[in-house]
Amino acid sequence: MTAPEFNNSYTDLPPRMFAQVAPAGSPDPELIALNETLAARLGLSTDWLRSEAGMAMLSGNALPEGAASIAQAYAGHQFGHLSPQLGDGRALMIGEVVAPDGKRFDLQLKGAGRTPFSRQGDGKSWLGPVLREYLDSEFMAAVGVPTTRALAAVATGERVQRETVLPGGIMTRVAASHIRVGTFEYFGIRGDLEALRALCDHVMARHYPEASSPLEMLEMVVAAQARLVAHWMALGFIHGVMNTDNMAVSGETIDYGPAAFMDGYHPDRVFSSIDRHGRYAWSQQPHVAVWNLAQLASCLIPLMGSDQDKAIADATRVVHSFPATYQAAWMDRFCAKIGLFPSAEGKALIDRLLDLMASEQADFTRVFAGLSDGTARDEFLNREAFDDWQHDWQAQSPDTGLMRRTNPVRIPRNHRIEQAIQAAVAGDYAPFHRLDAALRAPFENRAAWDDLSNPPLAEERVTRTFCGT
Ligand code: AMP
Ligand code: MG
Image 1 (cartoon, rainbow, N blue to C red):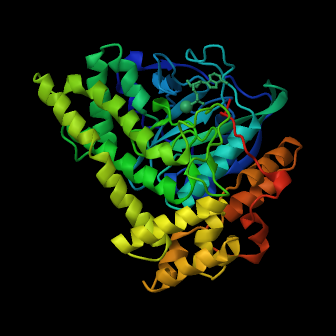
Image 2: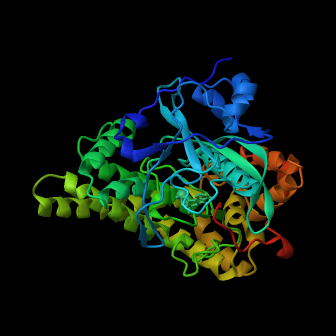
Image 3: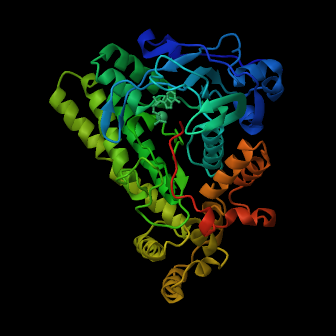
């Protein structure tokens, strides 16, 4: 039972890239959830995490020796508009740990109090966003999507003021790193080439050791994002706020503020209350990713040698490589969803099926999960059209095992998350724990969890989600 052994590297970068800051602390912390599987993966002692010293860390009351305790500087394009100074306003990086397999991870407290980047905010979080991110990110990990993870959720015992007064919470987030496209922008827009170079070297050493130049790094970030977004699409996942400050260069999904999984399928589905024009709708996500990556590219161009015309041409070519990688990943994922290897026939069948689904807003998860057990037909009103499709699909001899391994039977449905949050606010964490357990086995049919696969009743439907403030 020992404290985490920190091995910090971000703090070796120029000091203007972060601010040293202590967490505000929690008056009466209570551990809601500790992710023991993740703790083991990181080589952290669960006994220590549950100890007084461990709880002090997870609630921001006292950090162990060797902690970095920093807020990172970043900028970002929010809905297309540049905010030159964002940064960790309600998050604090405790420090980095190296897992038994040699992989390096950041530990971060989300909701631990004010930092120099908090602007008007209180630096706190209420329980809702903590539990939502915990469930969403752990589900993503369970289905194999690169993502930040949730190590712990704590109720702080403090009340935070939002539209109403709500119980406060802190989530301990684990990430390959918290470096964002917006981190590069922060230094790019300031013309700080020294910091940009240091950041680039840090990212290459940490995430892309095969890259030997900023251009090669860009190529790898573009490919990682193309594969990531294709994976999101195949789950009906809508990130909701794909600002450049919410895009990690590691290729992990980050920042689950208004994120949501679709129930009824429609390509233009949007949940975020602030996304009035559907900029971040499901179908827009690959286009937005390219837009964001173009921002990253423009930050890197000054590092790409003295022939800037050539640098611009090279960077442009790399950003334009996104669609090919994305299309290939999309084909792999969606063809697998209908039990086929990638093929033109498969693509045509998917397009037809998605059109049918969209015309009735059929349930995304239930249709695909139902293909392997013969219940997909029940999800349609126009059975004739589905039968026609099914006839042509069966002719391709789909692989049932492949479908079962690909299509989750359960997703973190909005209404279930909402119910778990409501119960938690009232002091009952049982629905949260039940949902968490079920989402960790997303491909497993189990009668006791059948209700969690159901779409929402009309009165349960959640049509709007909110940023995690
Ligand atoms: P988001 O849109 O949730 O990714 O957050 C955008 C920016 O707002 C980031 O710089 C956050 O740190 C900051 N922020 C959000 N909520 C708060 C808060 N309650 N207190 C301080 N800063 C916040
Ligand atoms: Mg953010």
